[in-house]
Length: 105
Image (cartoon, rainbow, N blue to C red; front, side, top):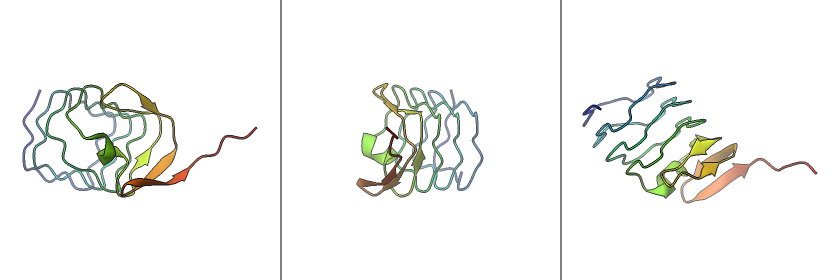
């Protein structure tokens, strides 16, 4: 558990970091690499832009689902707050997906 409010983590490497149950209110999480990071039950996640969120876990985190899909975020095998998995890879683009891998038949 940690309180990481109003911090600048811009472009930080949070690969395999465990910020479970952390209060991230007002923290700048733009351009982070959160590959394999755990945000379980984290609070007050307000936004990500151009973040790498592959294999990241947001189970039970206080986060709006559309934030994960926003602004150029890379998602692949990302676990949402509801526990569902975004298989990806896909890139977010505001309120829509810009690119999603097509399965070969």
